[in-house]
Length: 215
Image 1 (cartoon, rainbow, N blue to C red):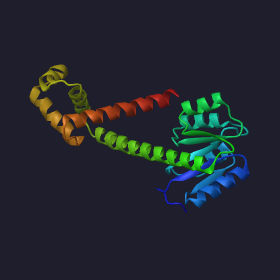
Image 2: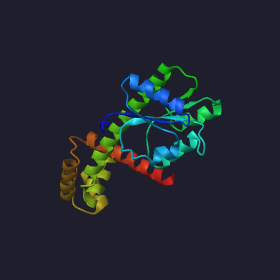
Image 3: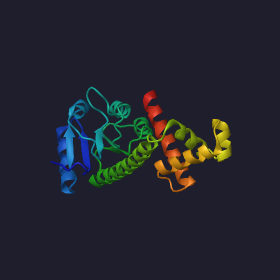
Image 4: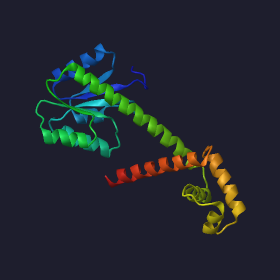
């Protein structure tokens, strides 16, 4: 059993020989891997949300690697992808990279090229997961605010003074000060600058969710 926090390299290729050779390569550098013959097999597997990356053949029966990349993005699966192919072309590689692929390798490729790309993909995944952790923590803190405290926070980070906020909300300046204190305490913000950074994180999080809904 692979520990939950240990990165795993997922391999999707319809060629059993390619799957086996990549698994052997990864085993030689102590990197766990799981191999699948098709995107459908990968999607049907009982995978936990473990860190890792995906080594994906771009030409697969039934569903191309590019279509699978799109499907994963729409499903919110953010695994970094390394494409491998024996039949690639420039437009295909450009499309793959524009859609967020880490690397596009032509078969036969040097084993070190693949290992370097995998390390780059695993590092990208580690950074993404750290960003998600920070976003989740800030969102959790924000959800403890009352509706009025949320309003006050929005106006505070917009640069308004307590007097201006009170006028905007139709309340007293002293009440605004109390709400502002609660906001700083609940958000665990040590300064206005820290609160502004948190507001920026929340905006990016909301933008990402809106984009997911659009897709």
